[in-house]
Image (cartoon, rainbow, N blue to C red; front, side, top):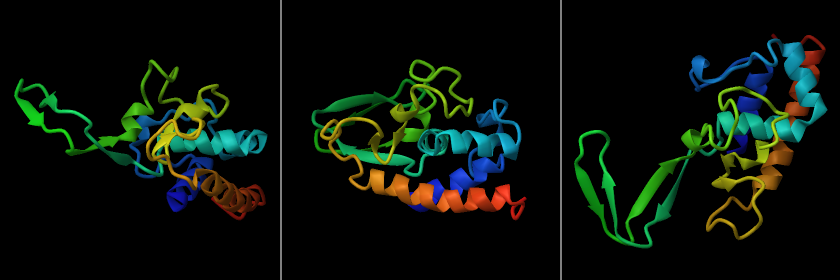
Length: 163
């Protein structure tokens, strides 16, 4: 997760979306590397959280069904019965683009008030301990490691060593 967060954050500084399709991230609020560097310098933690909202370092998580569940299979109308105790995997990146939670969900905006609500590291980053059965216990360390590495990359970009 940490390596992915570093890679994505350094990419965003250069207006690169990495594995996320370009049309799924709107960089219009910060249209240049200079603008991105300024946004990063204003609040590195919010910047990294916003990057991780749009390009999560942990893309999915698994949970155990606590009760039987019947799910509809796409638009076919077919139903599938899943017994209690089954493992299910869910995609975090889709939840991070929910317009009910995030205004302009595809806009990269580190200043957004809901930056900490992105599902990263297996849970909402700013949620209190115990709110999730399996949130990453190393998420704060990961954020610090990411920030330390990205600080150096930002210095290199600022000095003109990068693209």
